[in-house]
Amino acid sequence: MSTTEERPMPAADEPESPTNRPGSMHLVKEWLQRPYVRRILWITLAITAVIIALSFVMVAFMNQSGGPASSIMDEIEKTMFVLTIACAPLMAATLAVLTYSWWGGWGSVAAADEPTSDGPGIKTNGVAVVTWITVCSLLAGFLVVWGLVELATITSSSYGSVPANQQPNSVKPVDVNVTAQQWLWSFEYPDSGNIQSSVLVLPVNVPAYFNVTSLDVVHSFWVVEEGVKIDANPGAITNTGFTPTKLGTFNVRCAELCGLHHAYMETQVKVVTQEQFNSWIREQGGNKTS
Ligand SMILES: [Cu+2]
Image (cartoon, rainbow, N blue to C red; front, side, top):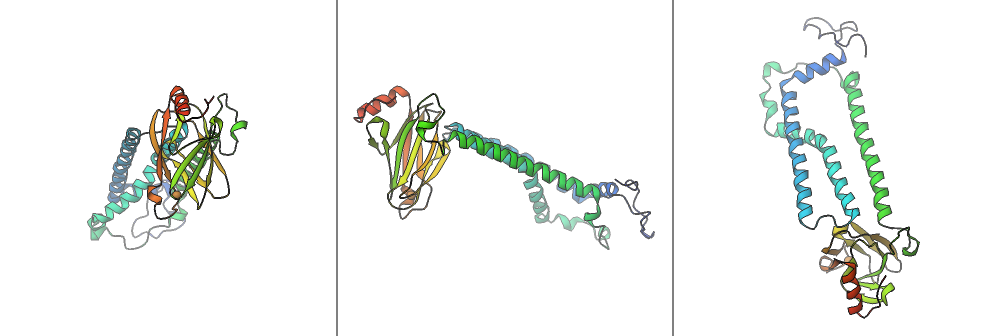
């Protein structure tokens, strides 16, 4: 910063010149002293606190209503939470100015205090410019790095491009052929005598690998609480997978508008123990799975 940083504002009747122009830091300090700036900063702090509190409430709500049922959904929820917290101050600052304007805050600035001319341009204020660029770059950089790391983690957990027989798991995955059609789902277990089911049944803590296709239009295979969604295209097979980590019954839905009864194109995924899974396979007339 220049040596003129701490030079005070020139007197009202003193003409401004390069030698008595107030420094960047002095202008920022003067700006922070203004009553409306202080009020907006306090409102920003309050709204930030509310957003952070609501984020915790939202996570508790999601955990109560099924919660993350796989490591993939766990990562997705964590990402939503961290990104909300990281962006909370920025959203709060925008809402604070809006709130202040809405409540008529500007009307409280006394006519006598109203400036008669424009202040110095912010583009010449080194402190403001450097602070703005640094904060924005750090935030954007954090979001990009977090996003890329999470994307890699989720992709490797979803076996998106690795066929079941080439996966580096010690446990052999349960292979399931998923067929979508207007407006229902059917599941076939090729490793267990090709038994068919309208409900997806999976053993807990065993990787599941899906070969997804459609008989008619484009659908989307969405296993809600497991955090997995992939298009079901006619004439093609798409792959995805997950390892269910929670026992229970969860939702399978279509996530691609596919016609009149799209909203009702849903079924369930039942995550059971390996023993329950084996006996279910036998009940369906299939041979025992691994
Ligand atoms: Cu559909």
